[in-house]
Image (cartoon, rainbow, N blue to C red; front, side, top):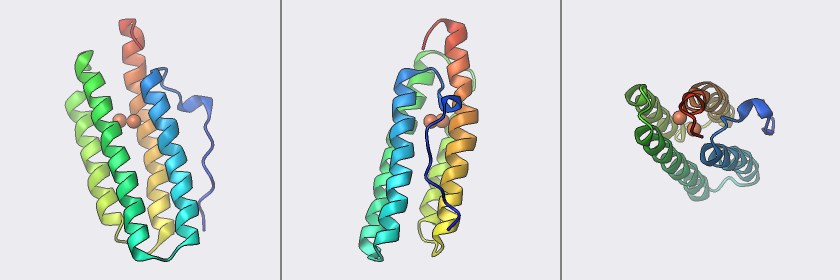
Length: 131
Ligand SMILES: [Fe+2]
Ligand SMILES: [Fe+2]
């Protein structure tokens, strides 16, 4: 299995406290899910774990979108569209047999979206004197 436990790095911080707390939780959830899936072949439990991850991702995305809305973030529509795509991809990937593919996707999501895209929100809020 190519997955290696994710560890928080300073680069991951957006500087927005609420977002950073949620990202840490999300990273822990990915790690925990990886451990749990290795220890269980129960299809119902596996589906329930994906539901937990998906629900948290949805909660986090709405939370981020509300923050962007509140501060007039100019790229909100595009960012919201990226969130929708991630949720859609997660729901079809949850059906995949290969854990490698699922965790590759989750790690790419965490690094590429969380670190690159969400960092833009942090920089925007910092320019506004918020965050
Ligand atoms: Fe995020
Ligand atoms: Fe985001």
